[in-house]
Image (cartoon, rainbow, N blue to C red; front, side):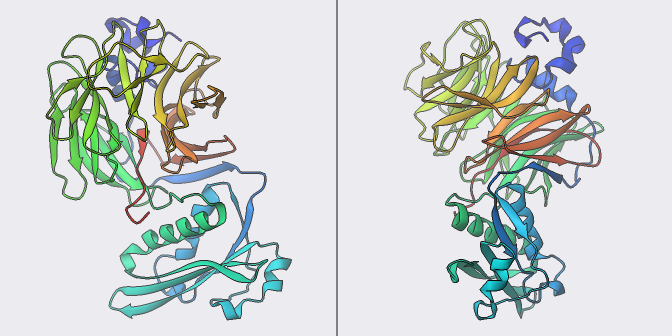
Length: 450
C-alpha cells in the first residue's frame, strides 16, 4: 500500500480503496473519506456485538425491578447490557429470586450463586407519565448497601435513567467513572445523502443533526457536549462549522481560501484548532469558537494536520510528514507560531490520528503494522506502544471520557462499521446496522451531572 504522501492527484480514484481509512493530507484525504461512505439507512439502529472480556470479571446479579413489566422499556435490561459491554462484569442469573428492598434479601442465596454484588429496585407511578425509580446496589459479602438512587422522571427518559444507574454501579464497583450516559457522533450516507448523527453510547436514540448531498466529515464535540464542530462540503469546498445541538443553529467558523479542516476543541471550549491551507500548505491554526482571532500555530514545509489538545490545554498532538513519513508530533500551545515540535512516535513509518487520553498520560492513534492499519496506544512517558486491534483498516480512534474504551471506525468483509476496544485490548464491540457503512466516530464528553 502506498502512503498518501506519494499519491498524485490523478491517482486518487485508483488508490481509493487502499487509502480511504486514513485522513492525513487535509485536502486529499477528505476526498478519500467522502467517497468511501457507502449507503445506509439514515435512522438505522446500531446493533452491538461483544467479543472477549476480562479474565477476572465481577459477578453481578440484577433483579428485574418491581413493576417494571408495566412499562414499555425494561430498565434492568439496559443496565445489564451497559455493564456487559465493558467486559468487566459477569451477569449472574437471579434464578427466580425477586427481592426489591434490602430487608427481602437473603444473602446466602446470592453467595451460593456466586454473586459479589446485587442490584435491586422498584418503579412506581407518580402522576401522569411520571415514574419514580429507586435502586440499590448491595454488597453480598458485607451484607450492606454500597450505593443507591431515587429519581422521578417521565417515562420517555427510562433509558436515560437506566444509563445513569449503570454509571453509578460501574463507579461503585470499579472506582472509575462510567460513560454509559455519554453520546457518540458519526457520519453515514444513504444514496446521495450524507448525514451527521448523534446517538447514545449504546447506539440507541440516533438522530440526524444535518443532512446534505455533499460530504460531511470530522465531527468534534465541544467540552460541554452542547455543540459539534465538523467539516461540510456543501459549498463545494471544505468549511468548518460549529452547530448547537439543542437549537440546530450553526455558523461557519473557518471558511478561508483553500481547505478548512480537522477541527478540535480546546479543553475550555473557547477555541478551536483547525487546519488551513490559505497561507500555503496544510498548517495548524488557532481560532476563537465564534470564528474570530485567527492565529497560526505551526510552520513547516510539510503537512501538519489532525491536531488534538492535551486535557490541560498546554499541548497539541498532531500528524506531520515534516520528517519524511507521517508521524505524530507534540508542540506547546504558544502565543506565537513555531516550527519547533517534538516527534513522539518512532515505531514504524506510518502513525496518524492522535487522541489524548483523559489524564494526558497516553494517546491512541492509527499505526501501520505489517500492511494493516490498527488502533494502538502509546504511553507518553515510556513511549511504549501496544497494538489493540488486528483488523485491516482502522481509522479515527476516539477515547471514551473515562479513558477505558476507544471508539473507532473499521472495515469488516468490505463493510464499514464502528467498533470499540478496551485500552488493554481484551474487549471489543462491533456497532453495526443491517446495511451500509458508517464512519468518522467521535465519543462525546461526560454529561453535566458527572
